Amino acid sequence: MIHSTLKRRDGAPIGDDAIEAFQTEFAGAVIRPGDARYEDARRIWNASIDKHPGLIARCTGTADVAAAVNFARSQNLLVAVRGGGHNVAGRALCDDGIVIDLSAMKGIHVDPRAQTVRVQAGVTLGELDRETHAHGLAIPTGVVPQTGIAGLTLGGGLGWLTRRLGLTCDNLLSCEMVTAQGLILTVDRQTNADLFWGLRGGGGNFGVVTSFLFQAYPISHIYGGMIVYPRDEAATVLRNFRNFMLEAPDEFTAAFILTSLPDGTPAAVIAACCCADLDRGAKMIDPLRRFATPLLDTVQPMPFPAMQKLAAEGLLLDAHNYWKFALLKQLEGEVIDRLVERADAAPSPHSKLVVFPLGGAMARIGGGDTAFAQRGAAYTIGIEAQWTDPADTERNRDWTRATADDLKPYATGGNMPNFLDEEPDDVVQAAFGTNHDRLMDIKTKYDPTNFFSVNLNVQPRRRLRRAAS
Image 1: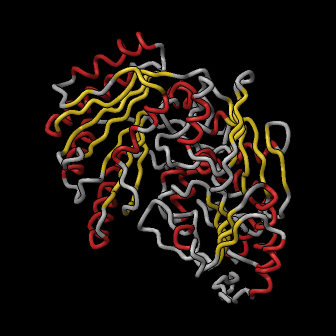
Image 2: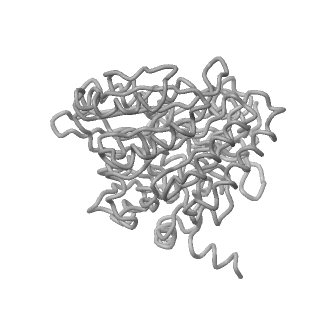
Image 3: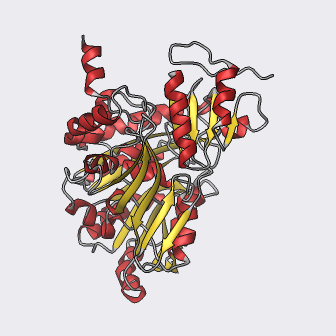
């Protein structure tokens, strides 16, 4: 018999009898160390994360989630919740505790008449786009198909439709959620309204969301693609890009990326998406093609899911990743020059700096209207180190940290919750900004023991008082 390494938070091992009793009321797969499925089940996209859960409970539905929560609470287990498993910090896993794995919960129901979509928590963006596109609809989500819809939504959700339609969390209509007490709640503007506010940008702090109901929109095809410029033109192109975006309408979203081509050639890339009608989109994007002489221009009409897959083309699977981010109120010339210098100094050709203009619909929602607080920044700067050889880890992490330090004098001091790696408490509080105190109240009400702690954690007030004493 395989003996579990599952342990309580105090380090005491959990006996097989307790696990076998849990299995009798759990319909999904219970995966333990030594199981043939274990190594694959504990692996996520970031190769820098190497955690060994004591048990992985792969849920089939909400009843399984409630059973797993009740078991974890009764045994005082550390709990991680896995959706798509794409968070760079590896919060989908934990050592020695239980992973409540939602990745098999793939239900998607599109209501074309109401233009709404009900989505279970294990769905990825690529799976969601495929189903909504079949009905000529789209939901504002992120830009990487492998991202899970659950974590993306709970932390905000930034992508190609954000400037026109807001963040993913801004388009959330209701949720079903399992609390730390194992209760199944409906959460919307009328029912558990305080919790609904907190789920829209407050991270995975309050429970396990098992399904989401989203507003969808009649978007089928867009005008978009990539324009690739030589790296030695990067500073000029970025200045022109900044000026262009100051006047861009909400239907237009673009990112400026300092990266390398597949053959290793350093480049400056504009990825653009216009969700207006195609003729207007072509005219809108045309000036981007004249900033300098492009090496490559793939901009054209395309199905929206094809635009969604562009970011994945340069993303290595099973590579090591380490990220930092900064929010800027403006993009000064000095910052532009420094970004290019830092990109040129990157030790890995797979690393990138991503300049993503914000504004539009997301900025017209008040910073206190949802838990997502970072509404006022003009740009987010992604510092995304990616490498394949573990021996290069320190060099790449040092480059990431040094680049983030260079941007601090120009940054707002806030952070996007979804983009954070492992960070100290003050950085977590800065991500939630002025909403942090209200989130603490909600945490204290729904999760007073901090049962859900393997996340961008907001601690309950009682716990903080005890720690202070």
